[in-house]
Image: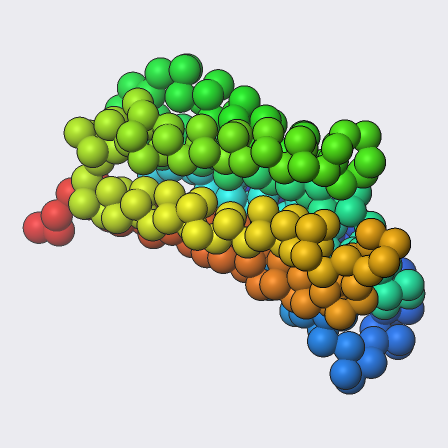
Length: 268
């Protein structure tokens, strides 16, 4: 049995083991609970994407396998967190901030590493690209969490987090990573790279927007996010994760399969 097949067989077992009180969530999900429904749909979509990405590692060249495995890890980690967030929402009507940030602290650095892995697959990517993207994600995420959790002023946390995001955008649009993609990538890889960086620009913009709306705009007299705003933001965050995690991985899959097919010798 190959490693890929063994890994693929273990994934469903791991997901089932990670499922919290799924029966409770299923029995108590109301037909008009659109937030709960969105949690349910996205968690299932993330599970399906994980199986797909790991299965497709068998169809690409060796240099692309790591990229697809990382895509599978991103959707797997997100799926587990969505199982828990879904159940917490159904039981309490709230989504603790800590669940979102634990997910993001694991998956967002992996998404940034995907840029490095793509560049490594098409040439010699320097370690500086890896570290700059990784550090940029931590600067973006950690102050945001500290602000939302009350360990730092929310405005200061927001500003520092935005600086980290802008630094990431600079690297993938104008820095060494962007230059390498322009000089060395095939049309298929360039197309995927360009779309990926626009996802980071537009798709990720929903997170700071949610931060602003939840902490500076839609707040009650006690300074807490209103219930209506909380519901709307959860739905938007959930839909954003479809683009920022699943669609992001599909772009990598497209680049990997296109390059692998191009590398195959023509049939006689």
